[in-house]
Image (cartoon, rainbow, N blue to C red; front, top):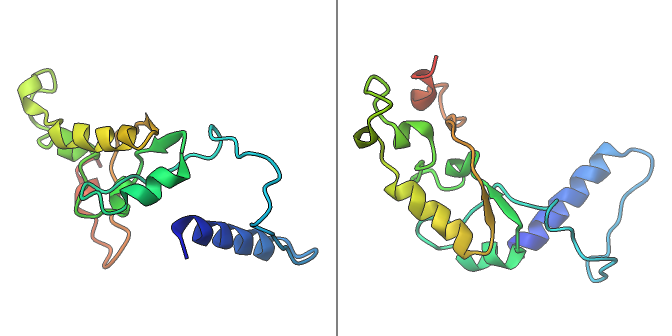
Length: 140
């Protein structure tokens, strides 16, 4: 099953579970009208390894939101604040204290897939494993 079909099936199941009035069914072989790309964007981007590039490109997302992209590719937390400005005690006005190369590369991958970037600068919190949140503690 393709990623697109899996998402559609999960969406259908979720809607059906919420609505107790009557069962929901969908015929994915019929197109009623084109999808409004501006409304159907993504928080899912090509991995730095490019292993999923064709799947992502096939969706034709208008925008890709960078919030929590690291949760899809945990080895690449390059869009988070602490990666761009890793040492908060340093002078924020000094450009030498910033690192943008890896982030710029990820943003270029998104754009090369035909999507615009909806950039969110923040931190993706570790939600798996024990309740240890290394990267979010520095902001409290």
